[in-house]
Length: 362
Image (cartoon, rainbow, N blue to C red; front, side, top):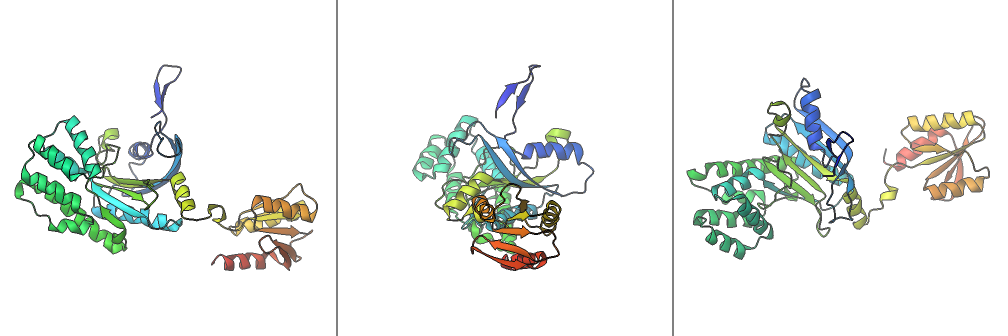
């Protein structure tokens, strides 16, 4: 976090993520609202160390929180929503790597490692180096059963691969977490997205409040996670003492834009056609502006350029699709200039709107 002192000597911090502020709002202002809550946000956040991606220390997160439901169906819903959202904005070949914070935490506790040894072991897990895992388990006297479990989990690529793992009753808690992951896979199958989800036992999210399923979204050959999330069932309790389960995700807007450009997507052309209005009459121009905006079309008025050629050149520089030349009244046919075609035609405003809707697929 960025931390600093105010004039009274109090320590202040810029928000580094949005889940904690939302948890505070839910517990202090939304206690009486029916659960579960489904909330979304798009907001800027600040982090000191962002050197791995264009040195961004301020960036934007778009995310959702599903609060008040402990069922695994909630986890499946947010994971599917992340994939659907990525597809909707045009990203291709998005994959989800999925792990379980509780599973990894329970295995580490069963291994009876100190905090420093846990950190070392998690780094080894991330490297997926079996030789180093062998040496570590020997050095710290880890049982052959646990060592075998670690290697089998690392070799599982899909969630359904966990079906082959059966443990003795002493490891019942670990077996329960594996069963949860298999159920999540069934839920994702209902959404039709299970082929895009991969199991990664070594996956850990940097924020410590995660308690269950955790996941990251990425694109092959891009090399950076676009975002991620997971279940956090104990965070709300810190604010008002009431236990309230929750799950959610956040994606980084700048990374998504960067990934879209790398996939050849022209971000500048995304969205509805923009219209520049040039009118002989101010009142008629404002009337046309309101008419188009009420139809959901992005438009703006031109105040300065007088000559038709200058107006068209100005529209090209703005990246506008059409110029609408309005006379003294909207009752008459207007001249519509299509920037892309480089030609003009006479049309009424209603017909113009219908033609744009048809060209955009309704």
